[in-house]
Amino acid sequence: MLATHRWVIAIGAIAIQMCLGAIYAWPVFTIPLQDEGWSKVQTQVVFSTGLAVFAVVMVFAGRQLHTWGPQRLSLAGGLTLGAGYAIAAIGGGSEFAAVLIGVGLVGGTGIGLAYVVPIAVGMRWFPDHKGMISGVAVAGFGFGAMGWIKLAGAWGDLIDRIGLDGTFLLYGIAFTVIVALGSTTMRMPPRGWRPAGFTPPGQPGTGAEQFTPAEMRRTPQFHLISLTFMVSAGAGLMAIGVMKLYGVEALMGGGLSEEHADAVAGTAMAVFFSIANGVGRLVWGTVSDRIGRKHSVVVMTATQGVFLLLFTTLASSEYTLYLAAALVGFNFGGNFALFPALTADEFGNSTVSDNYPWVFLSYGAGGIIFPILGGWMGDNGDFPVAFTIAGIMCLMGAVATSLVFPPRHDEAVKPFSVHGFLHNAHLFEHEPELAGAAPSPDGPAGDSGR
Image (cartoon, rainbow, N blue to C red; front, side, top):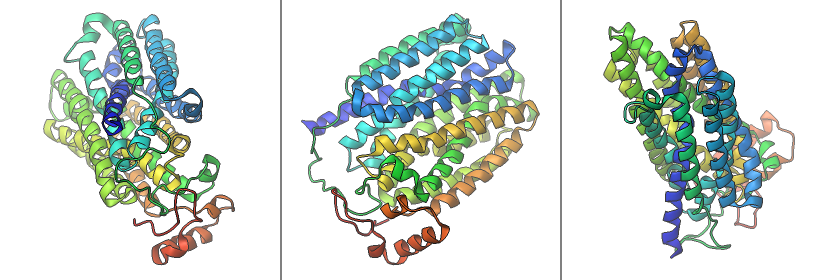
């Protein structure tokens, strides 16, 4: 019965995340807002504010999960998200201050409150498939963006029919109702419950050893993982924020009319990027259960760097823009399946709801730096430079994660030194039985198998 129930929870997680993914539907509003007199930078300030607030509030939400419980926390997130879009609507839909407060500050708060719940609950129900459930739990975030973009644009034509204010209000109502329904499924499993045939692993690097957030933050692994997440997610967020703006510009430079270029760029973002974003979360999560989280992150981030460096070459014609959007979207989505699971592997399965929000702060930092970089470069006619910088940073992120190995508790209590870090890395690579951390209540130390 409980084994069946955990798949119902997965469905509820997807429903919640489909609404939270509305932040990625922001590009559908950027051109109408520019028509109302907004600059490119202003459109990205709202987007970046939402992302940054989302990340910061997640730290609070991770702590409150134990007090409020998953149902109340996710419901609070849905109500707050809906209220944010209602504020933007009341402000007229195009007033910068109202949209910044509503979509950016209040909406970002709602996303941050609810986002950690499906991930934490899902990992408790699926300890045997952490990568897969991380992908499933956040897949709706990626797929949801496509639906909200298309409803506002080509499918529902909401912006043209009912205006920006009407669209914001309708979305606010929908988010509130859907998240409220999904929250009814968010329950932790009974204490001590395990899937049939599952034995908790006891090796370092598999989530057996638990680190508190304070301990985690004192390890070099935390900083390397956070750096990679910042550049990999931040580069993808920049692509989301400017893909339609730059796509139109590049396609017109390639000879398309403005109307045709607008339709193609919209399709690249709303269909190819969004679908690939959702698929990437599922595929990368499942792949990581087979080849390991570290190797998956290195491959994903390195290839993302290459795709971003090629993006400006591919963006000038219709079908290559579709390809580029799909490739970047596929790898971008993988971030949100891999980094929660990597955090659980390195710092503990049971403490992931406390620890992952701290890692996720790097997403917020990337969400401030990269989209504003893209908007600023766009206002100065230098979109290609922004994509080149993002690509190089992703390659550097891949190198950073290649240095990660399972942390030891003594790293969390001693001052960091490069010599000590390299010594422990050598032990792990060549004498893993000496590098294992002290035994924890969840199991003995040993080789991580990664």
